[in-house]
View 1 (tube, one colour):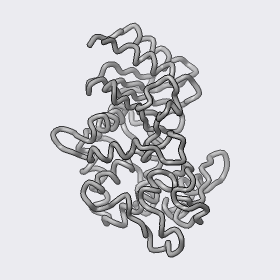
View 2 (spheres, rainbow, N blue to C red):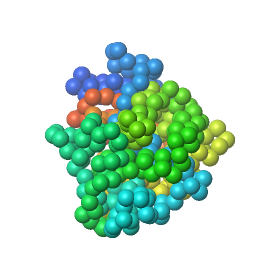
View 3 (cartoon, rainbow, N blue to C red):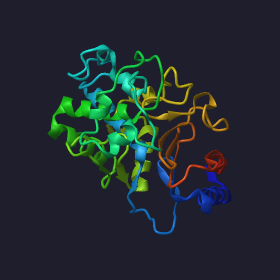
Length: 306
């Protein structure tokens, strides 16, 4: 395989235009770094918050527990305080953002999301107390609260020691995310929706794990069936969302890009794009998503000359 390096340079130029506010860009092809670039003041050692890309880490942790037989996506009766219709909510419903629980995913003013992240002692308390306003599976609605319910569920299921080991010993250290930090709330529950800091190369490792169907250095970290599960669209999401990963099914988000591309997404344009057919991972970290990422990615794809 040959590469058109002038097109790679063009892709880099698009990403790092001043108004795009890109801080880091990494391209992995066939598991190797093809190119990486950083804005002034950033380098390969810089820890950057992935914001909602952290949700995909939470999904991966659930996947590890499913592989071990500790959890099932069909599990219901998830919390002792849910003694009403919320008993019907399954792990699958939380992963697919179709729990039916009320939640305000708004950051322009005080909301359930901002109170959860910045004003509550336990990050699971606010979403756990919300009413069910739809039946599970009836409506798709993006909710950071559901992710933190999954985080609390894992803690309740495992106990603290195994819960903390799960993040670092069972995932981060096994795939080379050795300096990554997943922040916890004041009670010790990981804020699985929003606050993981990692080096750009480490974020790329997460994408590569999924590109390799959960296989890493001779070990199956998550089952290949889990990788397939996260790519299956939630029924009401119009092909845009799977199991805590965003999807491009039917070209629902990026019409000109491969429909089997899927990605981790965070506030201000943190992205890990996974291209299974091209054996490609593209990471972009920055401070703005108000620019043409599709043109950037098309240029990268065109640079892979057969």
